[in-house]
Length: 590
Image 1 (cartoon, one colour):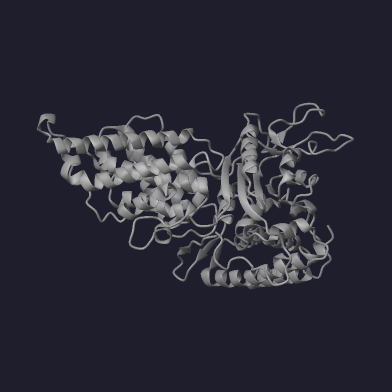
Image 2 (cartoon, one colour):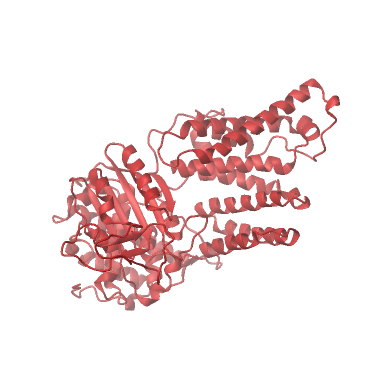
């Protein structure tokens, strides 16, 4: 029950049908306060102090592990439930006049509840909690709880308001409410300008950087979809009902379930906002189902009590690691590995700058090919880290393929998006558990390199293949009707790719072991589509420009299948970009 106490807060407050705080007045003389009202103020102060104490304690909780933090979150939700109900019931009668409760203080409580929901989403990966965070943040803005802050000569209060805007924007980004994001960014810009003019502060550059980051984040998508009124249409790319090809009768696949995912972002100069790079932002949505409204799905009719916890988790649990050190990365990997349930898969997504060795040894082992960068203060030259030690020593600030070997004792699914992704094709399956690595191209045509700050093309294919297909064809906009037609066509292509994977006699069993999970199935299908598209595209001429995998896929059955090549060319013709692709009948030998 404690874990769902937050639902009660939502039921009794988000609609704000109860009484609001009116005009605030100063506290009366203490001697004039009747005993009952004094007790009300005392109880309120106790709940307020207790809520702050519990909220501040959240930062001391371990960020990894599933069990250590749940009871603490439950207690925090319980106290905020009581605090919110208490101020609703007593604000007009006592708290305004006796305690001197300000509207911004009510807004601060609501903001903390919104933060609780957001952090609960980060801990559980349940997207429904994003809707609950949005409800509170939205109500704060609608009710202008922070409006009076600008009239007070206290810069720390204005900073609370600015931070509220930044948090609200993050939630809106994750919910793909881009129209609202643009409105909020404009309001935040005005608030920052007012703040810097009124107060001689040292954080003006920091807040201007926040504005620049979110503006770049919003503009990161390379293609816009336009409706008949020439208005941009924003589409969600989370897993939706019917969005993945179903298993057909006779398909023999594994029963593994994706339980945990580590999403690591350490690319230099990539668009980011709030410690979330655009690649991380895209892949995390590829591992989530479309959110539903929590209050309407988890509460019993006619009551404020939540129903029983759903039997199975809708989304895999995720850790988002922005520029982690090797120690941090390994700690989270170990925690996920330790708590991975039976018949479950751990996914590791690496979007990071490549680290290359300087020489080759006679024996080439799992630490001789370099890997991807982990966080350090070392110099980075031309976007790539160059090893400066002698050949016998390995790069320390790097996740080598060999570093992942211990974790192959359980089913492991690895995605590497890096200029040195091919280092990870030198894997050895030591323990006989299912193991697949999907590896990005290491070289892109010049026109694609210019777009790298806006996110990787490979990750874009895994996130939204149609968006990536349009981008690689140089299209910057598309009509909504044609977009929907192309999406419908791609659903048929995905079904055919699924049949290619499951019917191939030559395919490694590891792919079939993972194919039973819907998220991994979709990633595998999109990977095959990406590979087939780039192999036919005239700008991609080198083998290094094609994705690879460990184990290798049987090319003739999948990425070079004549049927799939025919589908790619049909899609290109539909979008009037057929001339950019080779004839599918050509023998592609790379």
